[in-house]
Length: 457
Image (tube, rainbow, N blue to C red; front, top):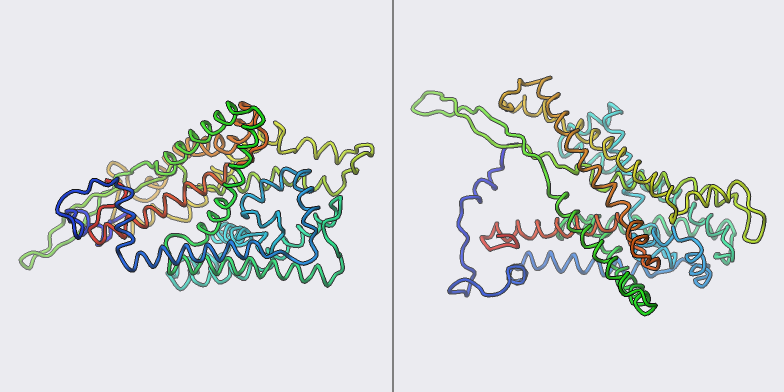
């Protein structure tokens, strides 16, 4: 696409010396960039505003719902390891069953549903092409859809707790359950509102930062689990575990930033001396290797978790003769090979599916044709569309394989190192790394716009 005027204006400008400096700073670039960010009043306000709302989020995450036996909840989490994985994304809110137990995930689900329905429903497709007003309307519909989804998810969590042994809920009266569901819906919508405030007045995508805050809040507990493993004589295993995680983080950074550049030529008209001349300009289209992000992981995990969760409703209690539901529950156990093998295959499949959906919505061939651009050696229209489809399919193989391998990293790490007490999610890693990179880019853009040196030389 064409570079914006701001980008083209900023590109040739030399970096200025920082105020108060006579020469080059001897401080590390990262530290100096953070100091520069806090010297700028508006950028400092954005950073502190974001941190303040994250603190509010953590307070809300510790407001429990009435009538929940916390001791029984702890025992339930020990008996169902899959709940610990879900608790990682809520920052411990699910373990305490607070008003923020669902986090912002009903909103994420509503956003994904709207994204998939937009190219299918003509009215939504028309709204998506009406500019900012249309996008605001779609965002409003997404908020409305979040409410029933949050209610269904909250009620499903309460039903699971009702069936728990020992019982987790002190009261199962209809009025109590309705109060809990309404409180959980209110907690979700409050977090969505906090995320939008961060987007408008803070730094980065507020919804992503809310999720990031919940995941990072669990890191001290992971450190505690690591300490217990070391004390239990698994020091070498813990070291190997974190080496594998470090390699995964490096791979996430590489594939998050990786893209294929498609050269594009533009023909533009300029007036000189009362006559029109045609000039050619060139740029490129960056096609990301991992266009789908973490969405395929969410789809795949939802499917592989579903049979085990359904079977848990019909499974025979502990001590009784196992039935077919017990067999299904054991097959789709998060510690088993079938669970992770199916997760690997589904992640690759959804990576291709979601990438093609997003690519078709972008309509790059049509955009190029409307703006007078073309790919050198490729005819506009159908030939450009076929060429871009071939390219995106080829590079998506690398992105899909990357997502699938990263998705099973926790399973690989646990089996290679034999460390079972550490619960770390691959989706959590991708979210944390992605939010950190995005936030650094936001601060980098603010610094460069003011002619400061950023994080990257």
